[in-house]
Length: 449
Image 1 (cartoon, rainbow, N blue to C red):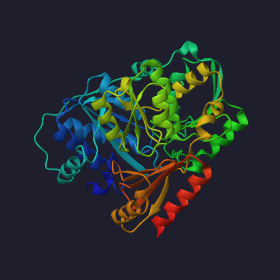
Image 2 (cartoon, one colour):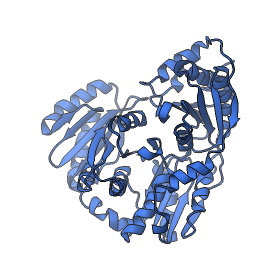
Image 3 (cartoon, rainbow, N blue to C red):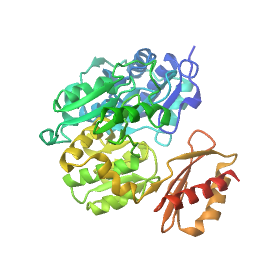
Image 4 (cartoon, rainbow, N blue to C red):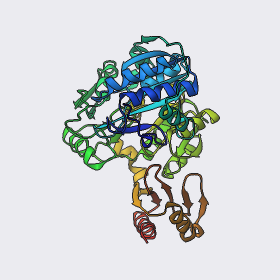
């Protein structure tokens, strides 16, 4: 019996409850369908530390090999290591077995094609879904399976983003959430003896005994906030399950929004390549494009989602991209998102500036006031977006790049539909806290009406 719920195929990846929505046979079918649709000669397969991941990974490897692909088994690695290996080894694709930040009962697959380009709903994932469900396989000669240790090249590539000698002694708190960061970071920290890292939950454990690996939820980052304060650390970092995203807390224990981090990292990257193009998403604070321009870069706004961001990076030869959701992408890293490189960049940033993170962020926090993302359930998404445009469109410039964006002189907003639920996601910013609160409440009232 094969369990493969069509609803497991999301906009950007495959994500489902194991084994009621996706089991080993379903994973086998998905991997074989990927090989039949994209016809790669060689692909990488990696897995995270979830309890179901070893079995799902074996099924993925068998499915891809039975479809005729030669499989490079990377073992238990972080998601970005599959992206890295796909580019570094010149492979035509990769599959990472992970459910990222989802609770322990979930499993999933992140799939990339040649050049580590994501395979999503608009770039082949729906065809993979249909073929996997049909399971009407083409005859194929089974491909080989070989193990490849990618750790040393990966660590070297990550460390190359910073000047190790420039990093001064710092104290950092890290919450690895019993995810892949606990396996990945120690290999990086071995090259940074001057950095004191207070480690929490570094033991990989797919049952997540301490908290879910989703730092976007306030209850899951309460620990890193409190511990950064109590330890008197320079900053704190909380990772998601597969460690391709890291979330920062400053020396005062205040959470740092992803768009503020994008602004800081853009400045760091532009110091290396002045005049480069930097991509950011439609939800972001004005701090991002304004910081990019001040640093001599070219800001490019884009749709939300890693498949769209990574394609735009290729089209524009962009140096760096950042999303509000704490995905940070680097051209010299297969244009992929990484949770390790931003950690290193933060160490270098604080070392070079000689200021605390809260001091560096003070100008942004005193000028840009963010609502954060607020979700509202609505019965008719399209109708509500039309009503919002009619109500607020006359106040500023309107864009439909991704949902509805309205930009006025002293405030702006983006309202996007969820890819999976009848939700609208509001992000709003204003140049004063009182105006932000007023416009936020006004828009939320209109959504609820």
